Amino acid sequence: MNRRLRATATILTAVLATTGLAHPAEAAGYSAPLTTAVANLTVAAENRTGYSRDLFPHWVDADGDGCTTRDEVLLAEAVGAPTVGSGCALSGGRWYSYYDNAYWTATGDLDIDHMVPLAEAWDSGARSWTTSRRQAYANDLGDSRPLAAVTDNVNQAKSDQDPASWLPPYAAARCRYVNEWVATKIRWRLTVDSAEKSALTSLAGGCPNATISVTYAY
Image (cartoon, rainbow, N blue to C red; front, side):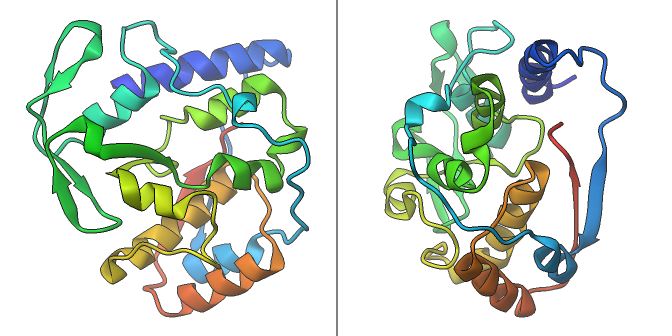
């Protein structure tokens, strides 16, 4: 089991224990072409009431190996392997930010983006989750799409916006971005608002109709 999956398994076991499902059946999945997947997204009004980033504990060290979720993503996405020092300090690596087609060698130039931002997840259903489930969402290493290492100021420009108001500045990245956004929404059974659904429908129509396959988080 690789580092990302091991950390996710640790979080998931804890979440399932709190719900009495310590031995779940094999996880269910979803698979459909992009346009079908977008059409199947449930539309619901968003609600930001009560939101705080603190309600999504993140960058935890779920498997106790000294590397937080942020570190695990950097290790998994490095295009040039870094040296791992004391306290999981990373040096000498190289990373590609697909949002803006940029390469970086300093980890300080990178943010780990929640593909569907924490505030957007709250708006779209996470406000009704337990804290342990929100922690699992914020540290999701079980799928490569919900978290991405990207240029810090690009991620800051995105903030908590959905595809109706923000897309990667690198135009060639936008179809990948739409695919990964939709996959994350489906994986965590999150809803979309009407403007978001309209934007995704339009964007998907201009992208290859590739099949999106996900395993539901639980």
